[in-house]
Picture (cartoon, helix red, strand yellow):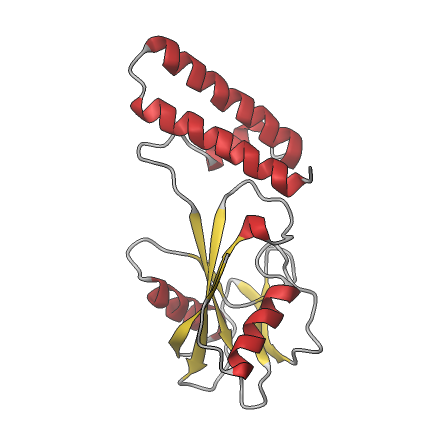
Length: 207
């Protein structure tokens, strides 16, 4: 079993404990669910080396049913069919523009906002290209359970202006991609998304 598979099982275990604590009334059950939480924290620490304090900060005891985190990204091509990428400040590697879905914004509103903030471009979303479940792809291990929504976008402005939270923005040929931030996007995913656009495939890929 690899680390990604193990993390999926641990996050499922913690989710069971969290849901149990939301609904349990019996003191015996509450005690057992607390124990499951502690076990899952220890297991997460063993896999990620985050430390119990950081894990408990990032996974607070929920007050509602725990759900999946959603990452929203956009694929945009220029006239030469080169792909617009943003260089992430977190690791210095490149990714499709985007980020965590914000409460109060639709998925398309999120990606329009992210493009404006990261690249300076005004965009419109054409269609949904894919919904990826991170556990189905060889991303580096991450304790969060994540769905990734990727939209095909078109620019309605032309001037690139990198945002404060990225290191650079630039267009790249599909055959000459830079080192990607694999926690955010994989080369295989970019290639799949690119092919769907170039081929005029209107269906959305979904894991």
